[in-house]
Structures are given as structure tokens and as C-alpha cells.
Image 1 (tube, one colour):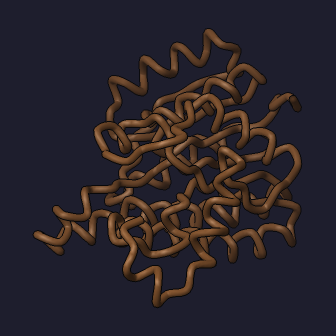
Image 2 (cartoon, rainbow, N blue to C red; image 1 turned 135 degrees about the horizontal axis):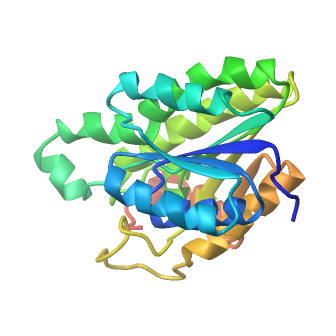
Length: 249
């Protein structure tokens, strides 16, 4: 795979299983890595690990999707490095739909974590990527955003909004040499899916990281991971609404 020398990766939501696997992958390719999240003790330990794996540098920085004041220090740390700036967004939250039904106020947190917080960060970062005439954004959405389903329609709607945002950002950054990859994972072995009934074809985070890196290298626009979810969701999207609204999928 292509080496990441003289490139910086900002990884938001860096303590998630998928983000850890992706961080290790780009560290092994020699990138500068900024791992961002709320658990600073965890992040500092992860930064040591990434340095040992070959990262040109690894720094833990605080990111909170609900606190825009945390955004600028991350961007400033990236600008301190030469070369292209990349960002991978693994941020999101998915309370059980039943809890949201009982307390609609939870919708605000889901939307900020899964869509508006990351979008605001990327909106602030975009001019700097344009100034350096390149770089890649990896936005991790979900197959849940492809169609509203009774089991997680609030989370799915937030990820659908994020996917539309990423499409527009891709259109913008392409003009200056940048790129945006929208990633739609199916079921992945992460804390978000632990304990949920009905999980099948669950992928390891390392497989998702491999697929993302391949998509970055090939400048893919939208990927499903594992790949077969593209066909699963094609079937789900093709079900007529009059039938779909009676199903529990």
C-alpha cells in the first residue's frame, strides 16, 4: 500500500475499535497521526503504541463533537506539520431506539455525535485542505442511513444526513485536488453493536480498516464494508414502501 510519509491523519473518535485499527494501519505506513477523542488517558496510551508501530509522530488531542472549542487546537496541530492533511471521522452514537422513543431529547445527542459535530469540524478544516491542494476525508457513515428502519431510524437519519454532507464536501474538495470517501459499514464488532440481538455477518474492525485504506488509495467515492452489504442494502432499498413498512428489518 502507498506510504503515508509527509502526511498527517486526524482521526476523530479515535478510541473506537474501527478507528484504532485504522490508526494502526496509517501509523505502520509512516504517517503523522493526531488521535482525537474525549478519553485522554486512553488516547495517550494509544499514541505511544502508534509511535512504536512506525508513526512519524503520534499525538493525543481532545475532541468533543458537542464542544466546538476543541476543534481549532486539532486543526492547528495538523497545520504544524508539512504536507497533506487528511481526516477520518469515526464519531457517532446509537442509543437503543426504545430509549429514544421514551425520551425524544436523546435525539439531539445522536444528531450532534453522528452528523452535525463532525460536519462542523470538517467545514472548518476544508479551507486548509484546499490551501494545500489535496488530502482525503474519510467519513464513516452506516448502512443504517440507506433506509429508515424501525429499529434505529433516528441514528439512520443522522447518518443519512452525514452522507449527504460528505457528498457535497466531495464535490467541493475535488476542485482543489482533495477527495472524500464515504464509508458505509454493515455490522462491525464494536462497542456500538455489542449485545444487540439479530447481529449477523459481523466484520472485524481490521477488515474495515483495510477496506478504507484501499478506497483512499483508489479514490473511491462510496464504499460498503464488507463489500456484500452493497447488495444487501440494494435489496432492502428496492422493497416497495407499502411492504417495507410492515417488516421488522
